[in-house]
Amino acid sequence: MRYMSTRGRAPALSFEDVLLAGLARDGGLYVPETWPRLAPESGGDWQRLAGLSYAELAVEVMRPYLGGAFAEDFAALVDDAYRGFGHAAVAPLVQTGSNEFLLELFHGPTLAFKDFALQLLGRLLDSTLRRRGARATVLGATSGDTGSAAIEALAGKDAVEVFMLHPRGRTSAVQRRQMTTVTAANVHNIAIEGTFDDCQALVKGAFNDLPFRDGLNLSAVNSINWMRVLGQIVYYVYAALRLGAPHRQVAFAVPTGNFGDVYAGYAAERMGLPINRLIVATNRNDIVARALAKGDYSAGQVEPTISPSMDIQVASNFERLMFDLVDRDGAAVSAMMEAFQKDRAFHLPPGAVARASALFVGASVDEATTRATIGQVHRETGVVIDPHTAVGVAAARRHRPDPSIPVVVLATAHPAKFPEAVEAATGVRPSLPPRMADLMERPERYITLPNDLASLQHHVLAVTKERS
Ligand SMILES: *Cc1c(COP(=O)(O)O)cnc(C)c1O
Image (cartoon, rainbow, N blue to C red; front, side):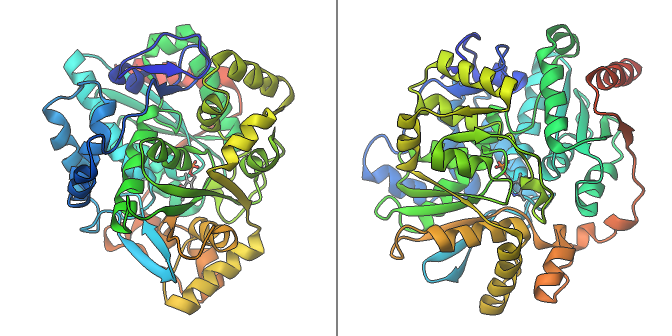
């Protein structure tokens, strides 16, 4: 299995090289050259998959993408990655209505779904670097949950130096503290005077500076890294198998920001999982919902919401879907992305919009509806959901294709990560699990930098030099 860039001008790479590189050298994102089939043989394969534990299924689903990498070690690394989750099922399903389910993806160490990919990514990265006798610098941008999940996955892994940017004052206190209270010497938190999109642009800028990138062996763990997508395909398969796939179709509603999680659902569908509909649920930062409805991919201002991990105007992973929608024409993707660079906008060709609408439906959910949905789910079922999950539930209830088809809403964060919004809607203050109960008292460590690439690069170089 090799990986190709969505912009068509970077060399094809192996799984390990893509893991280390993150972004392709032509500015594109890596995608697999082909989609492996989940059950290539016959019905018997599906039956076997349905009987596996989460970790066993993860090995089966991901192995075809590795091209032989990590041979015997892979199963042990996967097992280790999911052993620390706080629920025996790893990703339990909870019913919240007639044919409506939540897939709880918040039982990992940082209480959000990003642990699924990052716990594994950290182990694979460390293992690869140590085998090669190399070091790497991880540079990432986070609107909240990625940062803590990456830091938790890489803290103390001394082959890696971690620099994590977050938009100053725009993450919740719990989200910030999950990053800034980690004291491992290889972890460096930076608050940027700007938005998440500014942080992400700085990371892209640093990666596009090839001498800087090569000098530091720069690596990305934010959602452009292929491994982030791969680690998220598994739970779509796991949930669908539990609800009767392949004999029964399933729909998913996915709280969406950077389009990484829902793109993993698309990958699962490409692999042969019978997904009837992917409901792309955004808050009022609705660039992806507009792109899917009308082909209008145009960035406005980021508007803060009570679901801050989805407060973006540039959905990086959307480029991966675009690539398929234009028949994997790298030059066409390049042209659209160049237009976007210049004008902050482009239009998808009408054919591409029609094609996307066969599987995807976009839905933007406003703040009042999000709050009301948290309250409604609590009153109806006693289940307390976080604001991101509530965006998913609201979108699912509005757009589910057919009441006879089960709809699974991805519960992307634990409600205790957003206690104010949840308490306001339900009257219940969700509490953190005991292992994190003293989070608000732990000392924090981070520095603040302006929204300026040169200052960031100067800082990263100075710290890396001091640490080597
Ligand atoms: C990151 C995140 C999202 C958005 O996921 P994308 O892959 O960026 O679309 C949704 N909810 C929560 C809680 C998140 O942390």
